[in-house]
Image (cartoon, rainbow, N blue to C red; front, side, top):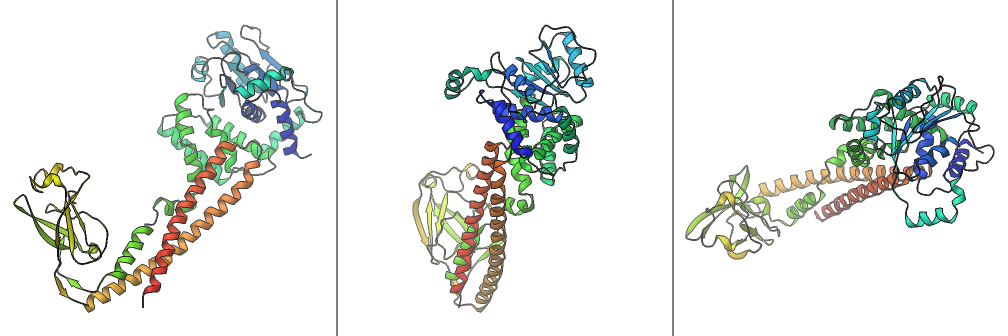
Length: 484
């Protein structure tokens, strides 16, 4: 039996009979092995003591120190114990506070578990140990109907679990494992995720002491160790995305951003390209327009830093100039022209319908007042009315300069398309390979499948977005075959 198989069977035995608490037992087990103090919070009857007892059952013949709510006697030497449990402690009791501080500093390798029915930010602050508790686990107040019926059906499973021979951890092997866990390497992705979370903490004024970061990374190393690896991977950090941080604002800030943190770190090598996606639709439109546009030279004037066609229309007895960018001529798309203030005029809509004649529609609201009225606060209605169809003056047909310029532009666009086709293909391959490689990690021991599945869904969405861009680029590339 491998170490991974053994731990998996041990966890199954520890979780047997207490449904919907498996993730808390798993995380508590990891913390106890890594020597990270934990606080288990929940209302009376939520299973706090049950989980603490199950964690103690993970060890073979453990020396357990249990301190009750009213117990004042406390041993002089706590380092001789393997597990120290403060059950439903009174956070306002000075003796209890002193005992917990003693346990934190003098426990050696002993696992330390606190349970209580006060929220972590209250209970831990009252005893001044919030910076020393690595994980705060808040238990749900109830079970689902299905889980409740399962528990009631066989209540005998609520007693101490029966750990099969050879599964419980001995102190000797635990000490040896602790040495080996220290040698586990933190991967680049793991460190990247930690760095991103640290940035979130700084942004939201969340204090996490260095020794707590060390304890958290030891838990990551423990996960890697039990999976038979010598280096952590990004899935070992998933527990950071659960509400373990003690304070509600910390949980909200970190948990809310965690999925994006993971995705950002995993996609860091292609992030620049993904963050500035190629506008394949615009490039495709440009090529189509160039291919079907004539080689005529039209009369234009420079306006708003681009060549424009100039029109004058009369509305409400007032002559108003309009400037239409040359790039729209002979296309079939609706657009708004510039007004004399060099702004887009939303109350006028134009379309060339593939010709050189401009169809103009206006908002009925301006018929009585004109376009100059309230131009600063113009509000358009949903309807436009046909107003005029104006021709464009052709200076010269089949102008050689236009032909040469269009040819040069098409050559540049072809190079751009070829480059983008290669780039988008590389992106698709990188995303595909990452998605496929990740699939094998889902079965890792301690992998949070909910976070994992969300990550994979996000990667699939990114892949589909890039695929849509790549398809449009391929469509554009096919257009160049029309050039003779």
